[in-house]
Every structure is written in C-alpha cells, then in structure tokens.
Image 1 (cartoon, rainbow, N blue to C red):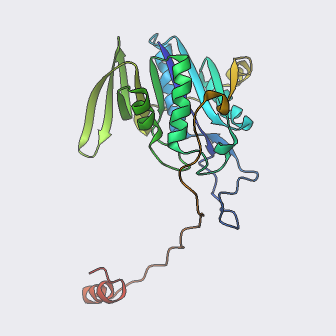
Image 2 (cartoon, rainbow, N blue to C red):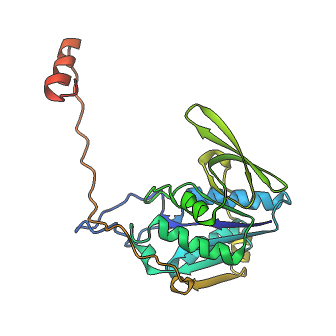
Image 3 (cartoon, one colour):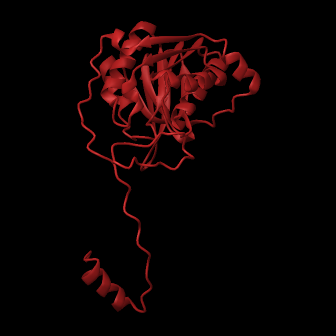
Length: 254
C-alpha cells in the first residue's frame, strides 16, 4: 500500500504573528517556519502504518517555493521514503493559494502517484480553513473520514474513530480514501540526527505547478489584515444588582 501525505510549511506555532505595517499580509522576515503540526501527525501515522507492515511506501508532498524543501526533509527524516515539491510562489502569501487550488494540485499528484491512501492534517494553523481534505476527497471521488483520533487498516478497509460533540464516532471506509488527522491520533517522533542525515540522500522530486495543467488562480481577494483589538481589563461589582445594571445598560447584552 502506498500512502501519500500532503504537508504544509507554516509559521512555527511558537512564533508570535506580526502584521505588516500596511496590513497587506503577515511579516515573514526572519520568521521561523516549520511543518504544520497536524501534518506532522499525518506523517507519523503513515510511518507507523509502514512499520506495522501495512504500507510499503510513504510519499510526502508539499506545495510552495523552493524553501519549502525544509519541511519535506523533515518528513523524510521522520520516515517518509521520498518527497515531491510542487513549486509555486503563490503559496508564499497568506490567502495566496486557496484550499480549492491546493486540492486540485494534490489531485494531479495523486493521479500520477496512484496511492491507496491519502493521510493529511485536518487543517493548517495559518489559515485554519479545514477544507483541503474534504475538497480533495470530492475531486477524487474517494470516501473520506475526517478528524481521525484512531486509524485501523484491515485489507482494503480503514476503520476510523473520530471525536464528535457527543463522544466518539466510528466509520469504515473502503480504500482508496482520504483521511484527515486530529491531535489525539499520535505523538509525532523527533527526527534523530542519523535520520536527518539519511534524509538528505532520499529522493526529492521538484515539479512546477504550471506543468500540472491546473487552474490555481485565486478566487478570493485578501483585502487586508489587522491585529485584533486589545482586550479591556475587567472590573469588580459590589452586588448582583450592579452586575445586572451594567450588563443591561453598559454592555447591552440583556
């Protein structure tokens, strides 16, 4: 079984986001970039399936500029067998490459690779769209199971446990399928130094997005970004009557 794992290069989750002075986007100057945390979980799960003897090959793919090779090398160090970089400068700006465009490019890669399973993070921490996996499944006409907290593979059937508001839901999907990962699925391993060195020798293929014959022109215009307003300090009230008065007259919520 071949597993395809899309990953995304995002601003590291420890970095405080800074907005450009003109509000045109996020300031990425000297900012640490890393793999989207949900995608790390997806890579880890694919490697675990390979270690269990359920998969024969794990292929990581990302879409972005040449600098996005770093997240692919991370995926290779974790245990992916090879990687594919789809190059486009549209992915360098927040809002530049929309989920529909990403899904179309991934469909083109999946059509060439013919995987049995696509595992990907449920969302990225930069735009939080939570759309790409669902759109990709629709474009591929494959079954999907999202927000997976447990994955079991038996033959050509994947049993997926997912967390919902009322508890846990268990789904069975026939392969090939698209699965998206949630936080509780696993704990991604740290890439060891020997594996980081080995990753440099693993194959990394580069494909220009333009060569895939996919329309990735933006459908949505980003008008601007702004910092959220600073939260005002709280106050203490002496009585319930004063509280109700402020909620009614000042906050106007009752």
